[in-house]
Image 1 (cartoon, rainbow, N blue to C red):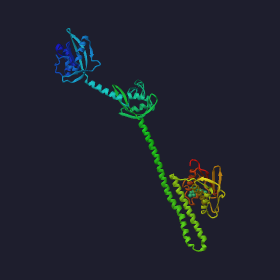
Image 2: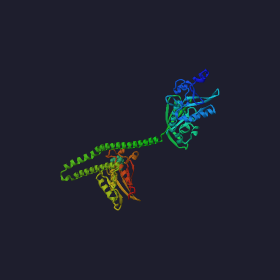
Image 3: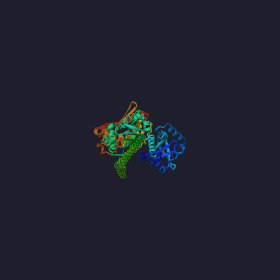
Length: 505
Ligand code: ADP
């Protein structure tokens, strides 16, 4: 400082020692002294500001108001800070404006009034403030919920707008709460464990999924991103929350879809496997079941050709009967196979017809007669011509011929097969009774399973298909198929069908 203070070395020392700029003006607002900090701040060579009007360091746009302001200030002669509530600016020699904070100190020397202005360049502070407000806006206006809470007490310190809106608590309310207050699935101890890796500096951030409970009690799924930070000297946790309700719903939906598809795929695979199994079985059945009758047909035909004499007619008849019965048998097996295929593919076409029951009975018995062993006979009622039913005749024939053929197959020579028919209420009850090998008790529960054959039947030809498809067809048309049997005594198979169709066929 120069001028009137130049000889005051103590003052000089102090003014040069401080980092704030000092500008002293007289009553006319002419600069009478500056320190080096002020010279440097305004980019003037040492003491070059002295003698200049104060307006030299004030941007033009403030000039008008400024003079009056200072005059007024000088008149009141009070020490104070200038421009409270307003942004003040200085102007450097190169025309650059910069924000300043100014403290004014009036004083008198020898009756003359002076004002000493302490000027601080606050450019850096303003930049920081701007940055801070920028970050604060990001924090407050973020559409993710952001929570800041004390790392010791866990009490919330700050909570952004979105969190307040979504959760329904005010900031004041939040300040009495902790993260575990709003997490019904996590208690204090669990939370302590959760944040331990952050507190021990083992991890820089952690992420976990949980549920948040709003003030109104409703819940929503969240993903929490948590990290340790500091507010001044206080350690705080910053938590950014993502609402993952949609994601969870989507994941749930996706999982359900995958589950559904897996089940469908497993079903399709099982069906495929079953089909393959069926094919394999079919091939082995064909080779076993078809070969024997076919070779016996072949033998009969060869022999037929040899019986050329007239008196050998009974021999020819015997072979013709054999051929006819074997062809019937093959035809029956083929029908069974076709039925399996139709049942499995859902392609069964039932045709309901009104017909006398005797028609089907006679056909079945007629065909069965060709299969009878020596001395076997079938008793069947011949007085049922007036019993008219409405049913699918093909299905009834298939079921009944399976039962009668079995009765023949599994009975010894000279055995009798009884076919009883009763009219009970709205149903027809048909019983096929035989005196054959019967079915062992322990195997009875499997008897309607496809391909199942009882141990005692294995020496007899068969496929294990007949009962299975007969039962399925009858049940599809509102009927039933049941049996009772005693090993080595005989069996009793019962078909029950409605006289008229049930409604849902
Ligand atoms: P299969 O072609 O083997 O006769 P079915 O489905 O008609 O096939 O019968 C399944 C099994 O039930 C037979 O293999 C046999 O063990 C038993 N079965 C059926 N009917 C009788 C019966 N009348 N007497 C003894 N066992 C029978």
